Amino acid sequence: MPDPLQLLLDVQDRDLSADQLRHRRASLPERLARAEQEGLIVRVDTELAELQARLADLQRSQKRIEDDVATVQAKSEAENKKLYSGTVTSPRELQAMQEEIDALTRRQHDLEDEVIVLMETAEPLTEEIDRLEAQRGAAETDAARLAALIVEAEGVIDGELAAVLADRDGIAAGVPDDLLATYEKLRVHLDGIGVARLDGVQCTGCHLSLPATEVAAVRKATPGAVVYHEECGRILVP
Image 1: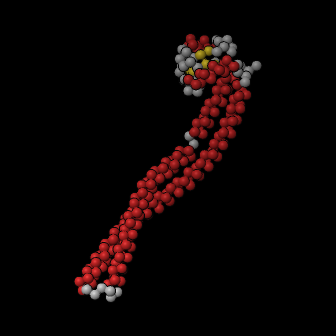
Image 2: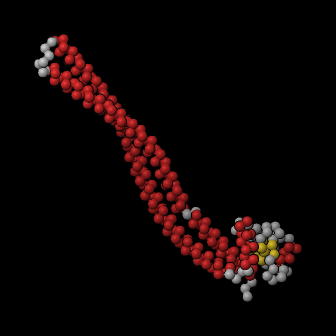
Image 3: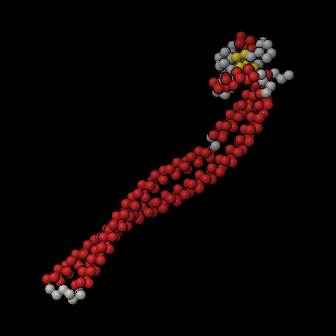
């Protein structure tokens, strides 16, 4: 009949392998790279929102001024039509109308200059928005590619983990329930290592050397007896 303590060491080996696989799964390089791309997308979205808000303000101002230009132009055309209609014959009125037309023309030119300034201000904003949107698109594409690689890698690791756990469960079936429960409690509090072999005078769990009297006690223990390392608390197997 297999020695339960030797079986427990085999269970420990499988548990450590499973822990390593879980760590590999959690720390896939693609996972970090994907997180970086997602962080970039968040930063780009923040910058885009700010630039788009500024551009929208400029566009609203441009639209308002263009509406003013249209109003001034319509009024100027109406005055000009009236000036040459022949319905007004008074030189003073004609002069006043011409002065009004001239003032409207100057006002229209001033407004059109304002529109040009706004368009020139908006141009670099539009270019930067286009650049950021292209950067965001590239980041989204890369994040999607990395997500697919993560799924693929997780599938491979999950397959390996399932095989290790199945092997572990088969071995653990030969370990008494009370001993297995004790081992699992120790694993929780002792960095995943609940049982260790005594290698010479050293505990392979904590790598500390045992005094000669404790080494002798471990080696002379009744076969199957559970002995603990007094220093680290792990089950020691000679």
